[in-house]
Image (cartoon, rainbow, N blue to C red; front, side, top):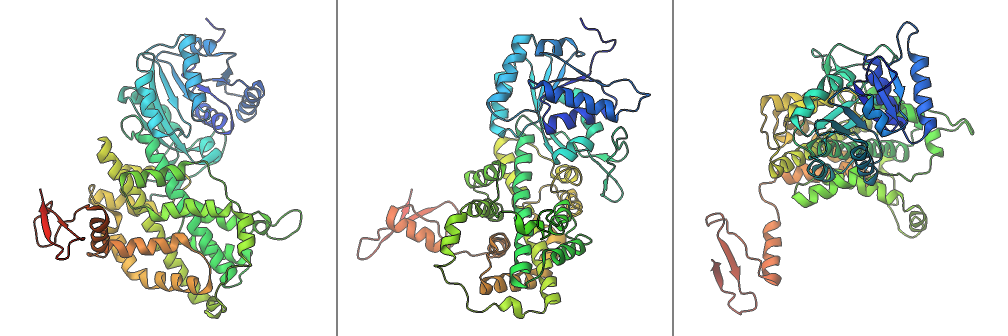
Length: 510
C-alpha cells in the first residue's frame, strides 16, 4: 500500500501559511502527518522546514502525498483529514475529490478555514452519507497555528472523540492557577503543561459561529485601540513612540492583551526607508475579510444590540473612502478650538484608560449576548465559561480580562448580559465618569471615536428602564396601524388609535 513502515495518524490538505504551521505543530506533538497541496513548492517548503526544525535523533514526522488517493492510503482508520483551504467552493471541491478517491463513511474531514457557519451546517447534512464532516475554527494567526492556537471545534460528537487528543495537544495552554498563557515558541519543544485552549463547542456550525463572534469582538477591540491612538496623537499631539509607551503601561494593568501589546510595538517601529514612525507611513485604509461584517449582520438579523461591533465594521468602510475624505476635509467645518490640547496630559491619559476599559467590556458583552441569543434560537447549549477560557491564550483577543469573564459565567452560567455581573457593573459604574469626559472631549475636539462613543450609548440604553420607543411605537401606529401595548394593561394586549378621526378613538385589537 505504501513504503512507510507506519501510517500517518492525520492528514493536512492545504499548506499555505496556516496549513503548514498547523501541520508542523501537529508533527511537533509526535503525530505522523501526511500532507498534500496542489502547489508542489508549498509541499517542499513544509517538508524542508520540518526537517530543519526536527532534532536529528528523531525520525521524520511528515511525508508528502502526490494526490488524494495516496493520502487516503497512507492514513490510519478512521482517517482524520484537516482542510486548511479558502472558504467556499474550494472546500466542496476537495470534499468531492475525497469522495472520488474513496473516502469512507467513518472517516473525518475537519474544515479549519473561515467558513460561514451556515455553510458548515449544510455541509454536515450534504456529506453525512460519505464521511463525517467536522469543523474547527482556528484563531491565533500563523504564530498561533505553529505554537498553539485557540481551537473551536463543532460537529459530530463521535468525531470529536478522535480529534480531541490531537487538538488538546496542539492548542495553546493556560496556567490553571493564574489564567495566564504559557508561551514557548520553540520548534520541537511544544508546551505540554497547562489547560488546553480548546473545548467541544457543540453541534455543526456552532464552532464557526463562536469564531465569527470572536472576530467581531476583535474588530471592535482593534478599533477601540485605534481611537485611543488618534485621541492621543491628534488631540494631545503625542508622538507615535510616546503613545507606544502609554500602551505598554496600560498593558501592565486591566487592559493587558495581545492586541494592546502588538499595538505598542507597531507604534514604536521606525520606517526603514524614512526613519519616521512606520505607522505614519502606512496608508489609512483598512481591509477586512468579512467575519466582522457577518457578526454585525447576524446581530441585526437576530435583534441583538451590538453597536460597538457594527461601528468597528463601519469604521473600516469609512477608511476605504480616502478620496472622499480628502475632499470633505476642506468642505466640512470642525470645531474652531481644540479643547483636548488644553487638558492636562496625565489626567486625560488616565481618563482615556478608563474609557477604553469600559468600551471593551461593552464590546465583549455584545458578543457574548449575541452568542447566547443565537444559541437559544439554534438549540445549542454553549458553555460561555469554557469559551472565555479557551480565548485566554492562542487567539487574537487573548487577554487577562477574559479571566474575569470566565469567573462571571462560572458564578452564573445563565447571566443575560455581562453588564449584569457584579464585577463589571461595579467597575463600569466607577469608571463611567471618565468615560463620559473622554467622549465629550473628543466630540468638542472634532475627533471621531465611533466605538468608544457607541459603547456609552449602549451602556446608557441598558441602564434606562424607559426608552423613547413609546413615541416610536406611537409613530408606527399613526402611519401604519402597527398597534401598541399599554403600561396599564396586561402584556400582549394590543391597542390602536384611529389617528385620522377627530376624536381619535382608542380600540383594543383582538
